[in-house]
Image 1 (cartoon, rainbow, N blue to C red):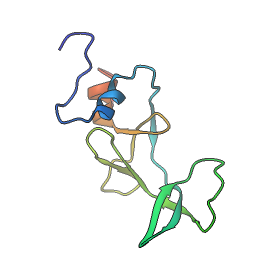
Image 2 (spheres, rainbow, N blue to C red):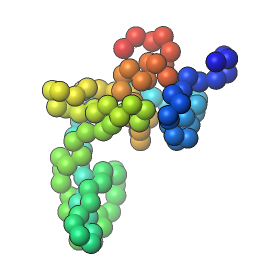
Image 3 (cartoon, one colour):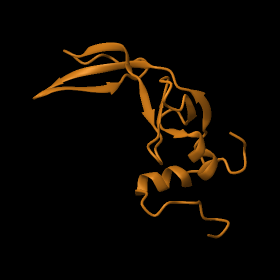
Image 4 (cartoon, rainbow, N blue to C red):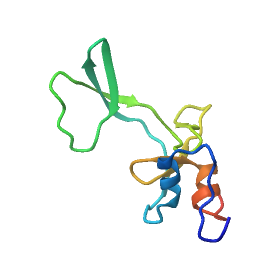
Amino acid sequence: MDENTSPAEEWWTDDQKGLVEDLSSVWTRKRFEKVAGIWIKMEGGRMLRKMSEGEKIPEGAVVDPNAWDHEHCELCFQKISEYPSDQPEGYTDGNYWLCLECYHKYIGGSEKA
């Protein structure tokens, strides 16, 4: 690996590689907290998605203030949540989350966890 190449795993998707290579992203260490989710009725059931700030609720959808109770590291899929068995914090760019280990290994270099 030369000095202009970001570390990568051979099984990563192009999106995962892009996340590590994007030097314009600003990552902030943050403790995970539950946020509202929206349950949307679909054929055969319902789907949950995270609610965006200021979002207009789709007709027929139900807001659950604590439904979005975890995220996953975009690189290794480790669960990040308030639950005791999970990592309680990680790094986020406001959209994606990285666990502490992946952030330091692939993004933050020698910074301490």
